Length: 447
Image (cartoon, rainbow, N blue to C red; front, top):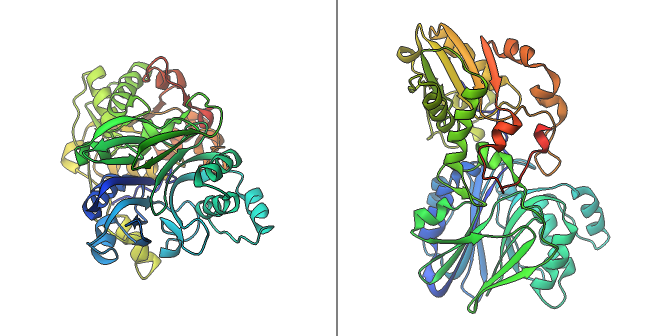
């Protein structure tokens, strides 16, 4: 029996923007950046670039290597470009809903890549209808709002737009000559800026800068707009800057383990969460295994604190490609179910601690426990390196309370549902203890 990994939030996307003072082929840098951000979105991807004469946009459905090999030309010669990888937070998985989005018929002539969700989307859509703007997605609403507010400059339009938007978002935007980046006033979704030789790069995660051999400059501040052109970087404060409330799931699950998000090392946070998890929920067991990929680092911490040896319990297949466009539902499920398989020799007749990053609906955890039992595990003790998710996210992750197992069942009921011999979650205080003392983060889904 094999399992998929559908019981996870899939509300994040990845964005990147590049600006060079010299005309270059942007293909390699955009490709490497989006490959590095592939974990943030696997449904579709795309790029837009400018040679200062015109903007061109290319996008397609699939993984980055698939889209770049089939839909994106190799000669992306220009001065600036943006890219995007997408999870389907809204709408169907097709090229129409892929990003960047580009409107060459407007007076702005801009392209936009967007990560996050807008929570006042319906009121904004109604507002735009009064001006004969028809929109479908959050990203298109942002683009049309910019067009609506555009009078003298993009800067002025963005200042108006960022005040009108509610939710968690980070965006990169290009005109023919300039690159812009902006972030929501609460800093929910991450965005940072770095430099590579004569080029600036804006990206969702700092690991992109490492891969490209760049130098990290800083995180973009909550509510901040930056403009990058031949004169360098200009900061535009569109609203009163407030305390940065990075989404907790950036540290728990969304971000790559080699990233630093708003000054916090993701690897250290996940390792410490495993240590704290053992201290809060000790257990006598033979082995510790992590649920790939984001549970692995917490499993290392749990093993370190408990002195229980860690081993590999699962093999994950990262090369499945376009499982969502198989010709039938049965074929789609067949492909998705190939993602994770147990190593029977390592768990047979063992008391096993399974360390997972989070539980949202509980369906995947139940399958994990089932396949471990089928493989001969003697006992299964499930440990979760995040607090119990009890409330829907009010800042952009599209879930209802009824979908969250932590809001509808007690701890014992969840343990019985997934079939584990014991179950333990990291406490909110245990999670906060993994962060620097002065770091604030959004905890609303745990409260």
